[in-house]
Image 1 (cartoon, rainbow, N blue to C red):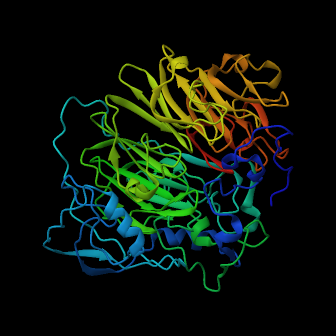
Image 2 (cartoon, rainbow, N blue to C red):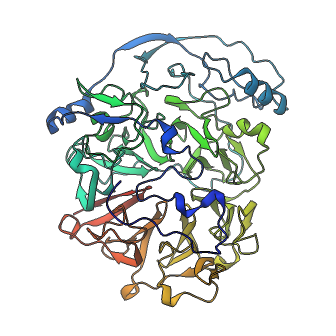
Image 3 (cartoon, one colour):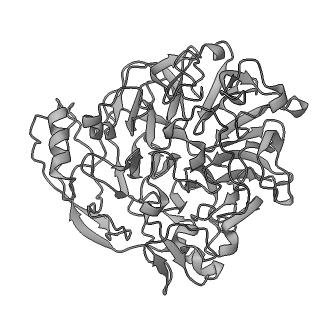
Length: 583
């Protein structure tokens, strides 16, 4: 375990749900409430001698031989004929699960039409070294998914590829390779922002990135994808099973916080494999174990898996781990993608929202019947329209419509949806469907995001509004200045803030971007691009130095590496953070 104190335990009398018990919050990035305990994960540990930086960089240019295969439908998803039905494939779930899924899905009765196959070029198969018993066949390059003709006006455009190359700075704890600094054990803890040497601004030239729970997905200046971090469930989209010659991986290890080196193929940024060469990616998103990438044509590719309260849920109703990228069958052009811990939202250019993944806390905006939950792994539109922005917390989600009204849904146990009337403070409280946040009306909110139990909204004037859990300083308000709207526990201790409240910041600083990790947040200032952080800091994810303490209010991150850098992008994970800026 990294050094530092244990996270605070609830005092006597606190009503604490088994779903979110603080005792499970470890100082390292923890497998959260919907994950298996570490002793069951079989987390792999790399133990190798470190290689030179040059040899690691060479791996970025490596390619695999092409072989010949045949086209099928996109793996793991149904054909777009208006009916949700599984496709034929080799890797299947248990007959019992499949029987339940088929029985529940009323739209899955039609037989699948036979399809002609064409010969295409495909990259060499990869195995990813997983121990699961249901391996998924390697993906192929299907023809472009047929898009329906868009009806109505375009509400948001397909984003353009960003052109400003960024210096990439990382900090926090990298016990699962999430810092991307190479395999040396000394790189597991970075207490202040450090420039990543594997992505020089005049070389790889990263222009955009997204941060998941323990991995990062990035886009270079040519619209190609790179990844680094934990690849236990295929989130990196490339083969990391081998590492250097002599690499020994302890498949039975409980923890990675030893002194051993990291897997060089996980800890070093490298290009995602098995993608057509002509694709240009313009936006990315990352959950705990899944990655998504949006092309310049508005098409979505994804890989990895979803988890639920009981463990691995799967990638689709038939595929448990999707280790190579496949297309997502959304019938409209997509303009924005976001990811929670184990769910995904996609906003189409005509303002429709599709959601899929784990829906046990109503984060999909609809009720998911337990016996039919495998059908929640198929993208499905739900009943909100004219949406121009989407955001997500780990178990809750947000949308902003064209009238600038903000709505939320999902887990609301600590008021993280900003809707106190919907059971906030009760064990397992949820907002079952999209509901307007009255406190943000007329605040002209332009973006909103969340962590596990807190949320942050940004207004057009650069003001920040926070709400949700506060016992690790998540909301950025001094404890002696908490508003009267806070909710206390039975012992009289402040517990959470259910009403979105404006944060007072030093010198009335205004911000241009906000992002949330599990229990910390980062904001970028408008005037100089400086990065500010607050929240849970015991694994150095706030970047404020060696103290490894929680940061109560938004505090500027200042060190030699970032002095004078205009930060344009920020991302926050479970126990680490990433910044992207220019001199």
